[in-house]
Length: 308
Image 1: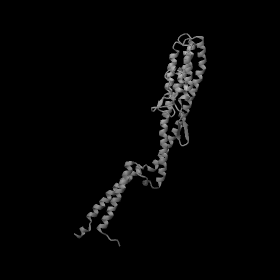
Image 2: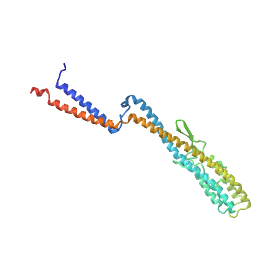
Image 3: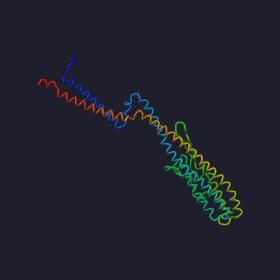
């Protein structure tokens, strides 16, 4: 036989009110945050799986962020390489035009402009750091300013100040690409060819300042094939850079898909079912109201009322 008492009834009702309030709080949190919990213990048996998936997500997101910066760098590098290659092609075309017209009035002025463009490309920067300087990212890799600098008695190598360090980038767990190019590797033949022209300009057979002499024509004809080969080599470097760009782009697309997939899997565990959460909140609110009403009713049916 169970004993009925006012104290016992109050205790039972208060327990129900507290339980209903807790259910209301839990449901309210799920509606507000749209998550099933705020820490790993809220996910019970899924906590270990969730931890592993979040670790994978963090790693993939790290690759994605790094690759985004790498794509920007490769794009800048592509522009610089094409600028250098375009300068070489412009030299070849200008020499061909001079031979066609038989005059070299502005030949050296034009070549000086192309020389400046080529050096500017070799000294290109990304994020304030020189692209083709190897590890010497704060040191300008090419110091020659004008073509006359090349004939001051110094070897061509003295105008390059990069080291031998080339950058390798890990773009995902299994793929590493070489993104670094060096100024001396790109520009030694280029500056040597400019030096050859400047040396001829300063020799007894020069300068180019009017109708081309037979010696000047012969010299320039010999330069055409050299500059064509030089231009093609520079184009090949730009093409290799483009291949790396394409590879990184493809990896980036794959990473984006994997990140989306893993986030979906994480969301399947952590994201609340909003329809169910809203329904649970409504039920919890009704439960609190019902428990409160029982408390009020119990107050009015106290044994003290019967004693009176």
